[in-house]
Length: 482
Image 1: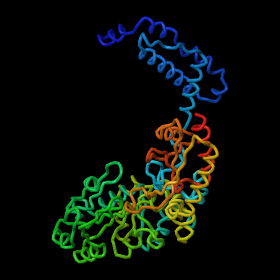
Image 2: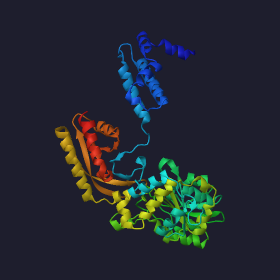
Image 3: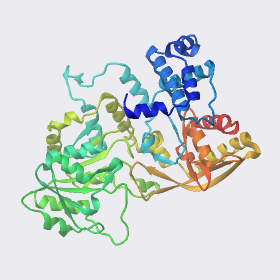
Image 4: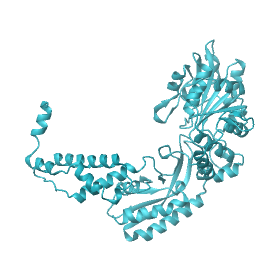
């Protein structure tokens, strides 16, 4: 026994030692728990771990109690109840559905884009059965797993060729490694973006083997900056769309078409990282203009990368489109295999892409697009309906306000676009906003809102139609009965 252990043991008071001796053993509790109905069909290892955890928790509580404060002895039934709760937590999946009441459509922390119901139906079929993932049914021999989506991507975007990898960071890394290893990559200083998780364009470029050549300033870059930087070691001109922030005021940037013309004059490929990426021109629907993949293809860009799970509304994926010669070179890169997508991602992406063949159908069926374009009149109707029902439940204790607020697209896209919304602000006598937020967050399923102006706020834009009864039940059982 070390000195520190001796010191710790000496610090235990006599009354604490007596309580510690009264703690039940694992075998004793195991015998009691296995007689309970809740333990039926629970793996033995899970039960034992829960029992040991409860005993240790009680032990720490005893040690933390002071001689003057006392410590209540606990009964077997209380120990069993604690074990039951621990088992429930252990058997509950870590990845759970939540109700997004934040108003952030593409919420990175809450799983980003929701898949269309049609896509999910086909996903279940493919996940539970064998499929022709890499089998050509026409030729009767091995085929490519990407054939099911490449043609669709090219059809929608107008590109000559396409490839899909696991995410857009992977798409950027793979493209840079293929086109510019040990070569200079010229990029505007104002486009050296950082995305979620502290991943930065310079860091990705360093891993690819490309040599960063910064030009211009944070707010102004001119075509002459690119032209003057081109030299014998230049391998690529890179443009990065600042999809998660915007520089305003005294600014200047080079258009993609100008950069493509400059690249052609010097026989240098031009790459654009669109970040989020979209097939829909939002400006047609009264929203801010976001460069589309089709715009980049039409500008003659050699290679374009973008995400599949943000504004596109599909699964997490990195999509690479561009000139066939360049895409073929990227496909041949051995790193491609390390970044390839699985059959579930492939199935979800194909299903989502098929919806884009009819733009209006895509807007109607793809949840991300539907929520972004949800009319304010419909949001008002939903907000008023939920407020009326909650008022009936809450009575005089409940105070509700309808608040004019702005929803966000989220997902590192359209930073300047605010979507007008009407939110529900809740206050309950005797409960703080933080208490309300925690009660809703710990509901099953969790309901995630936000706190503003000393109120718990929910935005109907991101609440799905079938989730309103769940919110009402949670409010009645967890808040009004607290």
